[in-house]
Length: 534
Image (cartoon, rainbow, N blue to C red; front, side, top):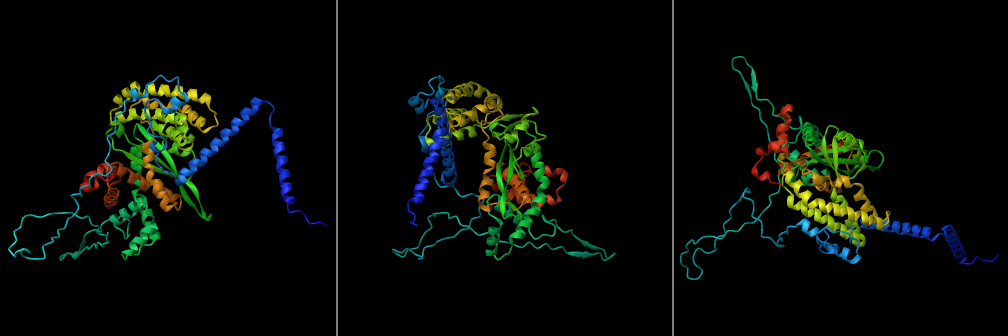
């Protein structure tokens, strides 16, 4: 039997490929218009896949900043170069630059002067005297003329200390009664840690993103063995102790007229499966400072094992007012009753166009970013003003920009494929237009939901370090501590100092006065150096 040729298999695969191509060609429609629509759909799909690849590459390797200078140069607030080149917005008659009235930002020196060392730091004096007692030139006596002083910042490593509580006993000489002071309360009944140590463990994990096993290794270098399981037990017990305070914080957040809402994934260990599943941390922020509000800002986190819309509905069941969030469908049911109004986020709209500029250098996306930038310029001028002032300025300066933007988006939508990246970005804005422009008629509302996104930054950083929560209970503990730390920081307090003060008092504090331990109420009890932490 003759030996098979080495090209036999190659020939077979070639024939099979040719047959498959012939079948695909035969399946194509004969109508040229249908062929054009099919080609457009394929090209749009390729563009969409390229955009997804670009987003994934950027998420893995790229910069997080969304500033445009590095991508497409400095964008004007007038008509963009893309408009001049392509003529895609010829119908726009609004002078964006005139309406925005951008206030120039003062340049910041690249090398600012050295900051003065804080006055509250302890100082020691070290004198450096000449080695000779007389003049080295002639031997004459030396007179004191003054001194040169320079400061050096030094670090003294933290040290453990043992606080010994001694309760002397006394006996009555007449009736032999025993008199002794009651045992002081501890954050953890019968436990070893004091409030300062517990505050340090919580802050290190949830504010400085230091996992418990790393803390255990650091403590071991000080000669103190604290196993990770022990630290985990302390965190659990402390979270239980702080639960009433977190509940009071949640009531306060939901008592406002406006709330920022968002969520982020939190990997949770699945017992017995050797892998993680995805839980969610929901964040709700009350912050009226941009609208000259006097109420203290606060943030409340809530944990859920999944992302079902039933969770935010339960969290905000008793809330009435404005909910500013992204376009997540799980929030839609919140607005059905009419007790809550939806306000959308322009930052999400901007991000979609920014991704297109970064991936494809899209002229239409550049033009969209220019127009959205004009809206943000208006906001920069009215930030911190009372709601009536903000509303009046927006109606006079932002409303024409919004109307022009809507007309321009509608025109561009008819010119591009709906399945393309630019088509999807435009359609997203148009689909949520009513919620996007609500801020222009209400001075209480912000242009975006960045208040909630800022509150989630710490969670994102922590997630990269401790990787996952050990259980659903661990997710709930994380939500509780993130709530207190985030609220302390929003009120300018050092989180560790705040937690130390709370843990020193909460065991004996009346439960019906738990609101007294909220950050803005306890601020006066903290030293001045702990009231200006970032």
